[in-house]
Length: 241
Image 1 (cartoon, rainbow, N blue to C red):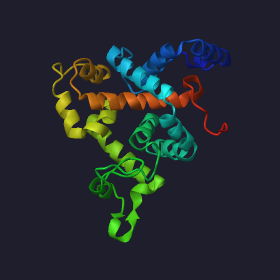
Image 2: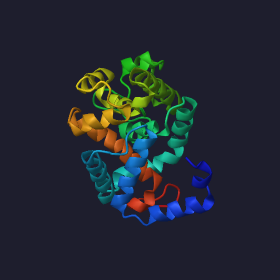
Image 3: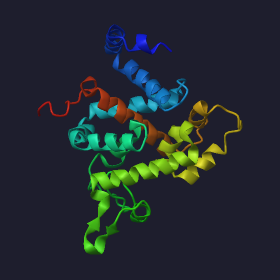
């Protein structure tokens, strides 16, 4: 690969102009493929997955308040997430798990008792080294730095389970659980199928719950919209009210 040519300012400018000329739908398709390649997947993304990403992006654009709130919080939180992902040697796309889990609200609490940026249950949080002692008013799940450190450990453990060539499976397992993800992968008939195609096989053959497929698609969507807020009708964070 000719890295010198790819990084030439004129080449980069031409690439930016080409992207700017794409329709919003084609831009989303391009970015879905780009993120897939970044995560070691085949660029032949199932149409159903692309459609799910597009549907979520469209819904957010039509009713912008939900995602705008996340964007408005992102300047305070995303630098922490991105830095700690880098320190843990994890792809930055994993930081968008927190965007979907908690809307970047460190105090977000679910009806089931999950809390914090990474929506950790008390037992899992303690297992990951966080102090959770409601009787004494202690809950480190609400600490952005400590909870994100725990989140990187959690994700790192998932990657150790599935291997770095299966980043997509680790993303899905944050929602489905590692046992559920392993059970799904056992349904792949060809043990020699390239790793870059395995997750897409699960999607094409509907071997994952709709909730999990939608969860991963929302993470892709958040990454895409955060990268070009104005294109999707959002106010750029810090650009005024």
